[in-house]
Image (cartoon, rainbow, N blue to C red; front, side, top):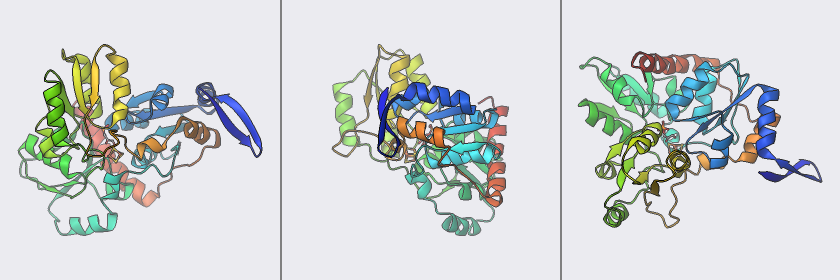
Length: 324
Ligand code: 13P
Ligand code: SF4
């Protein structure tokens, strides 16, 4: 993709961003890790595309000198926590997460204090300061298995996503004390419009991310993390899927099953798109710039990083034991 780029004040140059990014990768021994919700151009230049579990596993094992994290802040922060000696850059420092923001560290500390007998499991979609107050981190790929790996009488706080927490409680038959947080993208789907869409496509399978609300999940034929949803569409005999998660995932679904039809689940709003405004702040140009200038860099204070690393490594260890 040729792109007019201001290289110095008053000067404009046309550069091929795909080529320029490939040569920066070699020059800087950099790896690009991209989440499925990224723009398709970014997915196409990435070395690895995955869900939150896959991305953290890749970050933990890379020998690259620089990790370019095409995702949101908590994801890049997780990579930095696991790789304190590597440079971790995020294309846009403002790429945050409504779910992570719904759990402020000081309020969470009070919540934990009020429930001292509870073990804390936190969804990876939270800040480093929350991970530092957590016993075991989880993702949507392993939350059920992690809860199941604990003794049946263990009291558990599950934070910050109440929708994933409720889904995990149903799947495990456990009582979980939930933090009242949610993702703005997965709570926007319209049940009324979904019912009408299903009437028009009775053959379609509804697939949904567990961050969706309970009433919406009740209509799903399959529920799973982004990687699990993608794998389901690859293996299923169905030809049409209504996809209830962020629209970026459709790029890989169409790529791996070009003969199948993917319909984004309809949101309440009128723009008819399921884009995460945080994820979509990253652009190919910003990927290029952050690699070239090695900015903005993600840094985490050691007093937060160390306890946060413990809770993430516990998740990685349990996942490895379970073959996830
Ligand atoms: P997964 O890719 O782990 O399913 O997470 C979805 C998500 O909302 C990331 O922000
Ligand atoms: Fe956060 Fe939701 Fe966006 Fe994921 S999709 S980054 S959970 S706001």
